[in-house]
Image (cartoon, rainbow, N blue to C red; front, side):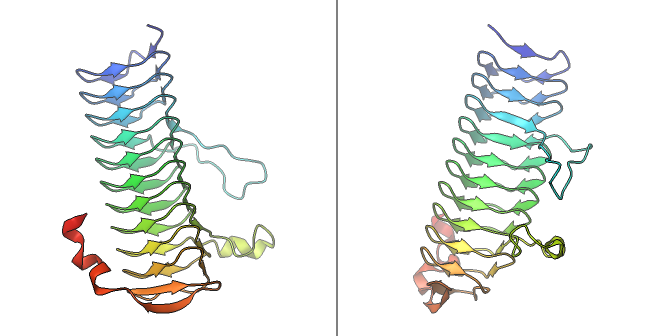
Length: 251
């Protein structure tokens, strides 16, 4: 079988490795993992036990840097770390210095950039993009084609619907003043964003705050309020039955 497994790699017991897979120096892979075809695992990456990695996945990729980029890639990025019992779909790219907790589902074509920390039991849907310097808690759902911008924070039990987009640059890449104001979005526990909504830089969605579909959010969303429209305005309270405290046993 055509594979490249570095001699310094440490492979656990009962690990299945597909055709054309490359496992580089000092990689650690736990027991009972299933690794598909054409997978590339970069040096020093760590994979827990019981992890499924589908075809064409890249783990531990180093980021590129354009001469025009305002942020340069450091030379000392930590290796990627994938927690036990994660499921990683086909064509996923997980960058270096990305730490992913246990039992996460990362669907086909998702991209998770460097300097990202993710907790446990999240669902990261098909073609979701999570940019660099993002912190994500546990038990969140990011649906197909949603976009989490750099420098964002997502706590626990949040929901981001398909095609929702967040942003971090009010100056839209012009005027050097923008360098002083980069700021992602903050989703407090239980926050929810509807399909196709747009969240402008620096916005905070408070606990149980809910953004309706297609809304354009230009101001912070109050706790347990529904906002809608463009620009978004408070519509009404989140119904009692929908509050996170009344649904924790259903998650």
